[in-house]
Image (cartoon, rainbow, N blue to C red; front, side, top):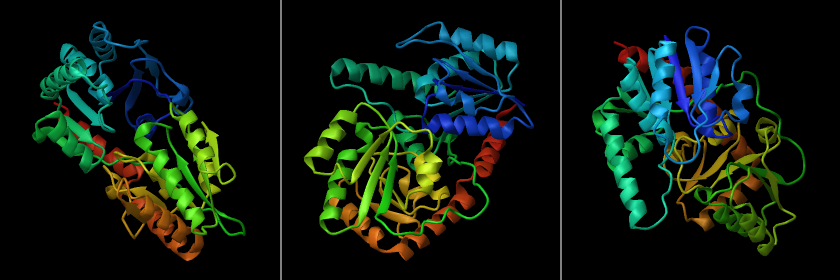
Length: 364
């Protein structure tokens, strides 16, 4: 098969990592290309050299020429499958596939719809976009959510008919060998990775961590990532007196090494699909403390691979931090089961097989 993946960029992010992993995993037996509608991005260096990466240079806002440019690319490459990723490319990709007559059309929704500002104009714009998305969705063979929660969201919130909506869990490569040794004295290191944005709710994380320290937890917190709330998080860290116990690492491209040097993983998001950050923590055999939102309960089994709490349960999260900070055997048991679950349900091989089955079923 000749497969084209369409995404906005290959900047750092979970969806971008999944696209690259999927392309790299299928290039040995299929002809695979990646098209970035805007620009390529820093993750391009992780793409297999056999996978061409193209860029159409779209700027911000709408561009009526995009469907035609993508359609020309589809025709010239004689692609059998167009696989679009996230709503930012959905309309353009869907229209292009219709213009080019591409046989199989698959779309993956990796997370919730981006937030629109308040006001009547924004509501009208969002309503129009959802209306167009529902129309275009009828011409896609499959709309895949990365979690059951996302699939329900596609049907209930966007209004896409459920007949062609399915779930394909994200997957990542699962390395062989034993997990890193985490023995040694010193405080227990909790790690959190991700964009410093409102949806990740680092404010709750810092308040809960302060409570855990006040309860005597021998712990430190490292936060890797950057984003629009960097200054606000730095200010809250100062206000809570956490400058010595909480380290803001900024953007990092050595996440595997950071995971290997940590004892537990912390995520306090207001919403997640199937978080690649959580999958990476499971691969590193880390126990997880997370909020019970979106697809997180599908990834983290409460009491088996991690500990889950309501999105506003500051006291519960603080208690879990304290528990894992003092109980090494509990950390080890949760982490080992998480790695086993990753192999069973969230491996790259499993995800790749499901998508290839979809492509085959959709190809005329």
